[in-house]
Length: 188
Image 1 (tube, rainbow, N blue to C red):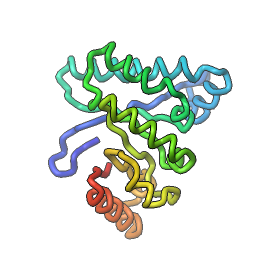
Image 2: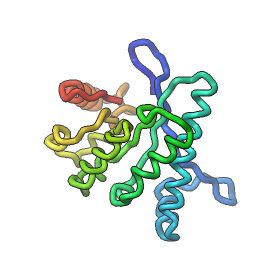
Image 3: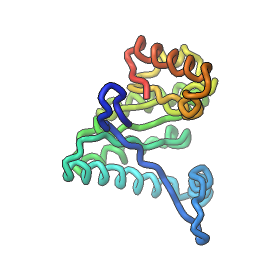
Image 4: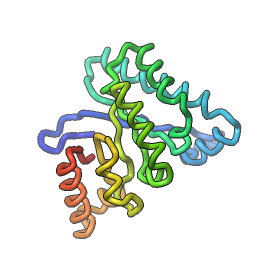
């Protein structure tokens, strides 16, 4: 993540990538689906949160004061232990919770509005930041934005990739940015 006003790097997103035996990348939804089918979600989440915290710690030790974001699935919103696992990882690596940003997709919010608000509240209690990811493909009513205590609206990449070639994409990005700022949130 880069600040447009001065080009400074302020954050990075930790993404899951797995190569199969042929050396090809397996898409993350396939990997996550496999983890879920094998009943390994809890174990995977423990590993994921520890890895993210370790990366943050190493960045800090290397003098890089940037934030790290990780993606959570709709399933994670239903796991009551996820906030505790995140808290343990932050404590283990002696990190400020505000350096970790948890990204929740727009579709997850629509499916589990009440659960999402409770989850965000628990993350706030820890001190973590929260982003509404892949925002604007058309799922999330604007009324949800008012009710969700998120720090960032991450504009869907399809609009950003098309900025140079589409006036519509430019208008959408500009509008979402203005709405984010009016609601006291940042646009990414």
